[in-house]
Length: 92
Length: 457
Image 1 (spheres, rainbow over the protein chains, first blue to last red):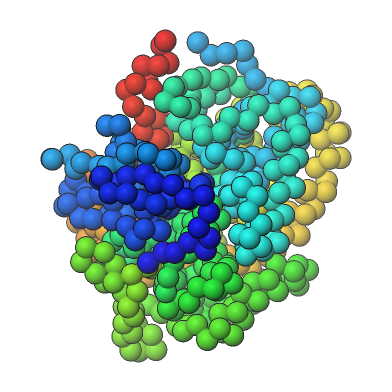
Image 2 (cartoon, helix red, strand yellow):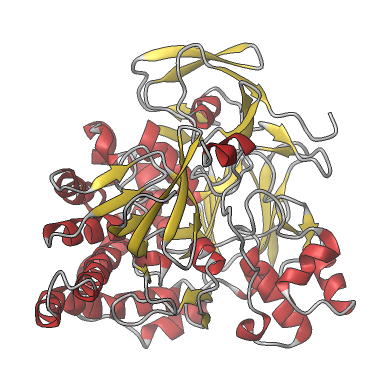
């Protein structure tokens, strides 16, 4: 659904244990899009799928978990070796 | 707890914030600029500091222009804190922010809020599905990372929609369709405001529309009843066009319905706001120097009124000049002299803005979403729910919170506040000013207990 115009300085981080190729300067949300991953979490009310919507830190639909903390993947720079997980819904 | 007062603290590093900082510092004020982004530029010039000419080339000269401001800012004495999230401003101009999981406070003599715009919520069925994002979000992906959507549908209206379409086409993207909600009524209204004195930006806009035609991108004008299809993610869009239902396949739908001031901080300060009928949104009330209903709180740029990057830049300068005079860094005579040129520039560009506001006013269906449409994305409250609350006696946006947690999720009403106001206004036959908007409280962005506790280290 998304593609990169250029593949420079690639490295790898993980999303739920799966290797994700990222380029320098990309946020986690951007790298996941480039790898065909748009759905990042489920809502706590109806367990509906959600993914990045605003890409500027306003909508909170792109939440993921890093080191046990819930963070906005569109505001988080991708880094080599970063371990990113899907955010758990409140009832999980 | 707060450090010694800084003369001027500016929140937001877009064109208004940058120009205010440059102007204030050049007249001897101590200035701190707090910005959530890793580099200066705001959303409009986002990624420009990365220096990737391949991408800057695709985005065009209006984007590259921002480099001038970014470079100027870097040469000043401004203390520029990046990756810094402001989550509270109080009436004494004390600002609380988080940086690197650590919270801090800074006290200012004057605060300039330059937090820019948000995309207007465009609630249609299916707009919460993965694969649906704002046109601005797709542009941010291009600006920051050179990532482009494949066969997207762009839907809605507004200058940014056509800009993004043109930029994507320039990047070699095949656009599945542009579904335009602009109506011929808008054309008639806009014709009366034709900005004969500023043809430049208009010609640029026209070139975008021409590119859509030239590339034979499917273009549907006057579309209504838009609906995104798909179960777990978007797989297409349906709409009414010339009396027929059109159904298109795409797993990437880019929505846009113009931009509105980001009023989270001004609302949290309980500043006066008023409804602007042409821009169909609330503006914080300010005087000619950007002064809000609180003397020490100023608002510059799109956060005050939508004008676009160039108006925001001039407005940042004017707001800084007003603050400098009040702090007695310059005389009122100097302020007036230095403000003459930026004021004249704004006056000239305002005519163009009125034209764009009339031409790209959101269509009626945007403010009248169907009952099954989710309005509050965070808490999944539908238009039908809100109408039901209204029938039960709910007259104000704040009451919708107790009725059904509407607006109480992490986005804190950023993507539902305006729609809730519109629905309650229609249901209760009140004006938008009478209905008002959510009461916003700090923290205006979620903070962790760890950050909160770090204030007392």
